[in-house]
Length: 179
Image (cartoon, rainbow, N blue to C red):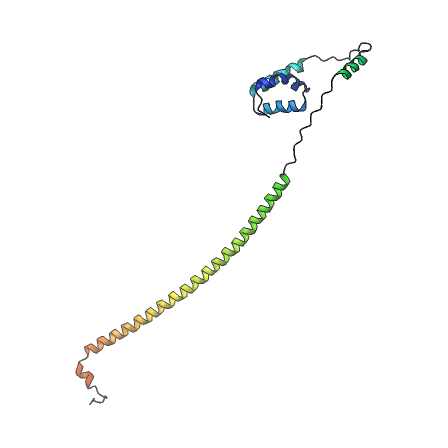
């Protein structure tokens, strides 16, 4: 259905206010008003106020003799309009959408749970690797200190040997002279 303009709708406004409009035309007017047409909304407001001010008879008026039969004949002579098919809106997929969202939320929770376990396992592996690395580092440092102490002891011994005269080394008491 095309968008209706104000001039297309204005002829239907009085019948819309009184409720005498067919369902399809009522829908057209409602659609037009739903498109926020302020001028038509104002016109409907003024028509509604005017309709409310009309005096209604308190007592029913008697009908002239035979008018009911005449009215029935005239109605019978009128060509019958085909009744318009009612507009039926399909059911929405809100139920399916809700279940889809529940399923996706559950899948996300499961994925987060598995990711959490994987991440926890990776963290534990990293902690173990760090502990091994720390132990190896401490062992290397201890070995280095041990070697450093031995090197200092050897250096001290070498210095002491350099200070001793060469002759004393050759003929120390308690040693056998070499041939």
